[in-house]
Length: 333
Ligand SMILES: [Zn+2]
Ligand SMILES: [Zn+2]
Image (cartoon, rainbow, N blue to C red; front, side):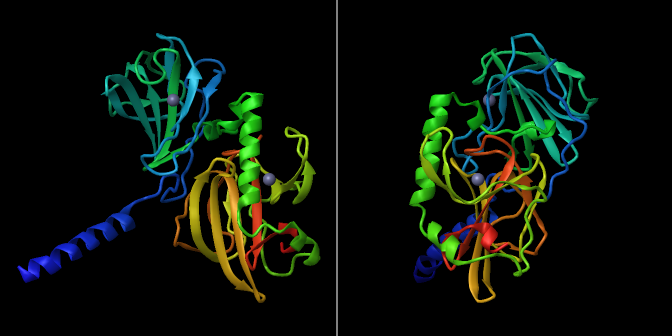
């Protein structure tokens, strides 16, 4: 009795630890994906995106793990890229087809399949017809893209910006913008004045995470939607969606998660550099390929440029904290 009483809590502790260590956070893929190429829309022409991608905060959390493309029942569904049919059948009463493209998988639903598992398909080949069921209910095609357990915005296949924000109506966009800014201003350590005191940057060995030019600088700017002065809490670099985001300096991944304003974001702790504690955040990515606790080297690919969260197009929003104070990234880089 004495032994089992001591053993049971230990077993539970071990099981919990195992689940924690074994769990893979949503949006964090295990290896750098190779996007299938060439790729195309799964419907003829250029279908309208009626609902965008919204990555779930955790594996089973709410989100929209794909894009909904306007379609009518009976319309032919086309393979988004060449590959092998992994599944063609019924899931929860609706028809689903999934196609493997090396380490990535595209999914199509609701579809009455015209292909079978194991069959090779080429880009644009009809794989079935739009049917009913699911949240599309015969009015759209839900198109998904995943790598292992991680969902990715399928619009990256077409070199387009994904993300739900650009699909919002103007009034909703304003609400989303206001929330994002309020969140940014409420976050600890924001101190715009610190930027002024630090003087010119550079010389610390940090490299730009993406090769693009600065499209919007840190500082107060007149918000085009809200019509008032707001702090832009980082530096924007213009870059196409899918461009690799590289670690600006060696460090440890402290967090990787989805935020409504910043989208898919990653926080790096670079520890003490030239006597200053340095942390960086990389925002609006499609997804990241590293996970919390992982050590990264300067230049290592962390993820890919996207437009998740409050973003009007593909870009990287870089943030820097020095000794816990948010500063203009260009005073350090
Ligand atoms: Zn959908
Ligand atoms: Zn920005």
